[in-house]
Structures are given as structure tokens and as C-alpha cells.
Length: 115
Image 1 (cartoon, rainbow, N blue to C red):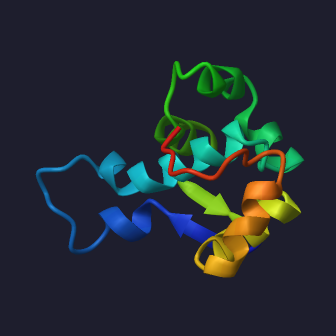
Image 2: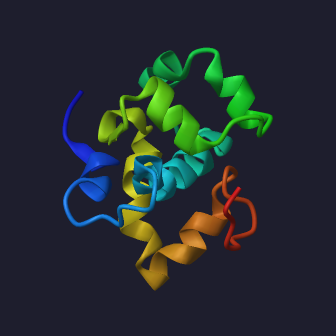
């Protein structure tokens, strides 16, 4: 794998509320991971690592956080994304890119979503 986009440990290590389980440090990563997989932005590498968990995630029987902790060693790497998936985080923050994003078949009409 190459450079990490995010790791749960970066959040639960150090100054992290003791009353929270360490899995809470991976919640946001899991949400993004599920979003990526629901939109087919996950690479072949991600599908390989996700194995039998992928259909469960797509059926919403497990969460992206569960997948992150059970199959991905709590780490999210750029190699887990398709080329389009790797480009998306940088473009989503630029207003001019919104019209491009809405035209892509995987995005559909742009609207906020946590699915």
C-alpha cells in the first residue's frame, strides 16, 4: 500500500476522550469508506481486501467502520480508491467542480448523502 489518507489510530491515540471506544476514532473514515463503495469508487485492491464483507456493507448489514476495523487494519490508503475516487476529495471542495461531479453517472444529481 502507499500513503495513508487516514487511520483510526491517528484519532483514538493521544488526546482522545477515554469514555469513547477506540472504534469512535474510525467512524468518519467508515462513513467515507461506505460512501465510496456504494458509488463504485473503490479499487480492485479494496474489493480484494473487503472480500465477503462487501456484499454485507452494500446491504447495510455492516457499517463502513466495521469494514475498516475488520478487513483494513484500521487504515484507509489512496490505493483503495479508483482514479476518479482519488480525484474526488480535491474537487468536491471547489465550487466549479460541482457541475462536473453532477454530470458523472455515479454521482447522480448532487446532494449531500451519508449513505
